[in-house]
Image (cartoon, rainbow, N blue to C red; front, side, top):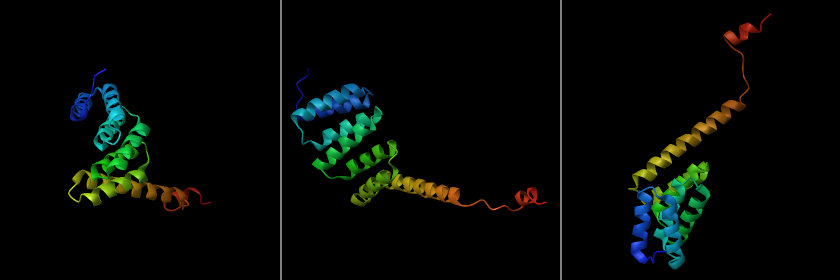
Length: 146
């Protein structure tokens, strides 16, 4: 295997990620992380690779580890995306909100937060509509009159 060193390994991992060579990227970043377990950026790349590969649980774990090493808006945003892809909408909203608060210029985070909040509102309205009793009126009422 290659002997990765600092910056070169993350660059290689990023190149593999951008090329869509996800399993190679994951292997590269895991090897790098074995040598440099405190590198927050490496966990971001690893999380992105897992996310693109559809392994949301591993993506979430990698982004959470990145945040444990360095609290930053980008990691919160990426964790929000992973939560969203895993169907954990309220967790996603929390992470997008944190990212937007940490960096008020982070347009993607603000847009994602608005989109998720709109989705949550729609789901709440749909749930409320389902729980409302059906009241006959108009043409419906005429069908049941004797």
